[in-house]
Length: 163
Image (cartoon, rainbow, N blue to C red; front, side):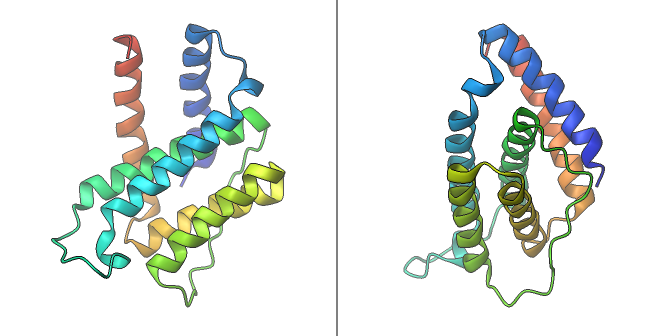
């Protein structure tokens, strides 16, 4: 996955949006963190069979799941850009004993930890746990990138249309 390119593309979109809305980068961090919590929640909703034991489930809509994961990637990249945390690679430990439900909880916990510290180490943990969740859900690095750019294009069109 070419993270350098993803960070660059996200910075272009954010710069356009922030200029259009008159927003300063440093004023937006808490909004982005809250939005990330919401996106992780939306991803959790798409994979209910992995955690919602009390409900009968239909099949997971893979395209919606991948899109929700991509939405999370957008906010993680944006936070990295705002704080100057530009990773070139993420190395998730694929040898995990966690279930998908446990990994979802790990992602929520890492977003929570980042909320308070906003340091580089917690950012790396957040990004790594989120990528690991995607991999556990069967989303490859290539699919993450393809989905990111598809959503990125959709976001550009939204903002050009005064979304």
